[in-house]
Length: 264
Image 1 (cartoon, rainbow, N blue to C red):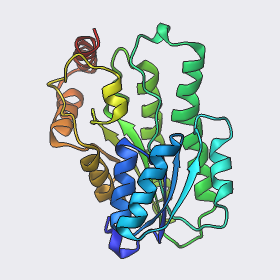
Image 2 (image 1 turned 30 degrees about the vertical axis):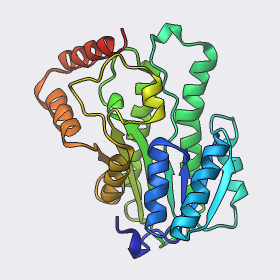
Image 3 (image 1 turned 90 degrees about the horizontal axis):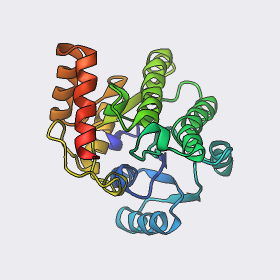
């Protein structure tokens, strides 16, 4: 994606914009001259980043302080910028605690559904309905390698990330003549506050821990080219071996054994 080309207009929305991969997307887009609609529940971090990007790159920002796990969050966010034409939507936030499925509280299970499934689905639907025919638009949904082969200790997270991947893949083919570019970015472990707060006992040798900037740049590079991308050559090789060479049952056991070692 060439940000200088104006392919998706002047404005982009980044949901989960304040830190980690969302912060990387925000910074890269601002660097390319795009104005930002930033959504995050962390007001102080979002404000600090938005002020920095405005000063450094001369872009404009709209800040929306919202927890996207709330029931009507998607509709409320879009209603706030009803008169603003934006043609690039990036949805990053996810609920992702690592533990055995039965140890999750009912409230946690609801949050998996609301933040990882309901809000992105409703936001994408509303975003598409407001697009002007003939104008190119783009959507990036952050998925995960965990959504491709479900590991132990991440059952609801993996299932919801698989949802994002299949949604993106379906829309990629359904909307390519509209024209709307849709991409699921299936990242492996990424060096974000959320990842390190899960307190892995060690870093898996099977996949690489990537920097958020590299993940975001790879996703933007592949938007419009394919429905699903996997940042990092080591991650792509890992996925190829697990899905093309090994039986799925063996692949699932390898991934799960790795999780048990990282989170004993």
